Length: 119
Length: 146
Image 1: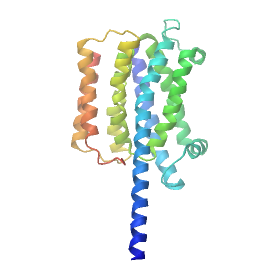
Image 2 (image 1 turned 180 degrees about the horizontal axis):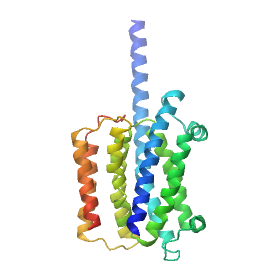
Image 3 (image 1 turned 90 degrees about the vertical axis):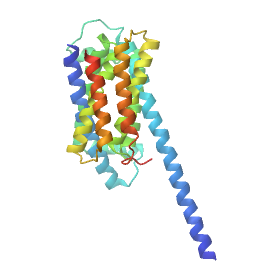
Image 4 (image 1 turned 90 degrees about the horizontal axis):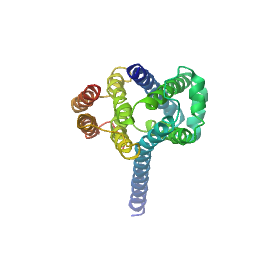
């Protein structure tokens, strides 16, 4: 059960982060280079993908609550670092952000840590 | 001479603005780094007091949100979320993610100290690997705005 919950946490977090990054950058382009908290709340109300990001976050949050209810946070939280590796790969592929060799090597180290956590 | 003085003044203002924005971004980054581990601690603390079996009913989690410790954790997460969104509007995801991932290590430490969790040597090594991975990524800061 803990692996199912962890998978739900990871996938929904990744989805939320990618949508958030994409939408906040778009909002920053139209609203000036720096966003205050009020424009961010406004952006929430007008951008559907941002709303989808919030829904993903909610699902992720409930799954996380269920996970920490029965598992130690010293497992649940580091294991959720899987989002970091998946997001870095997707940031490169979907957002076209630059990921260089040291960054990729770092991501591999994180992946090794997660594998060790699961053993 | 007047023109030179005016240009110098403009340059100084630009440098001051840049410095202030850098300091603001750093403060924002520190908030984002520390808020999440402490919110995790409060959420776990509160959830440990709920019935042990995992519920598929969303109402169970809505109810859990009214547990005082869970509520404190959620409030911290709400602020973390807003500050993180603000940070994402000025810095790339591939910079924000590795730096804030230090929080995974901080959370493990908080779990060990406050929740008295048993953290085996193997788990510490795993956490250390995650930390090293984030440090390597964090040292290549070409895509950040700090």
